[in-house]
Length: 167
Image (cartoon, rainbow, N blue to C red; front, side, top):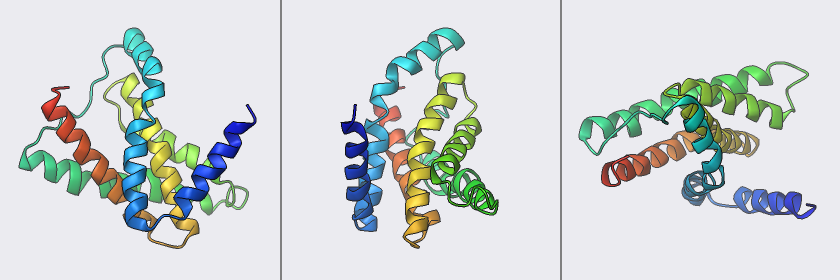
């Protein structure tokens, strides 16, 4: 069990040293791949509370504009920027990155109320987005636009997958 923190520290160091473009690419794919271990929990939530519904965006110009251009900056503002900046104003929480990231991810998940399973899924994605925001906030490099880019790229890939895999 002792290796898990070492792995997390090495991953954090790797991500912290990436150039912004590569950070966006890597975090987008990590946010897609690292959801896989949680599929049994998502399936259990679907079994208990019903199918995981989602926004059902398809590869149309309207859905691409909505899902890739319009929604990501709005959700980044509400789910990361507003939550994280507000919690940073509370003196006792200012340096509590883990707690702040958790609250941000929770808000992001609760924003996606399509189903109970999708709220959990949204929380998992929110963890990646909150981590990215906090990391780039510490680096003093445009956390808002970095997270918006990750979110947009992720949504674009999701639109492609949902169109061609019909889910």
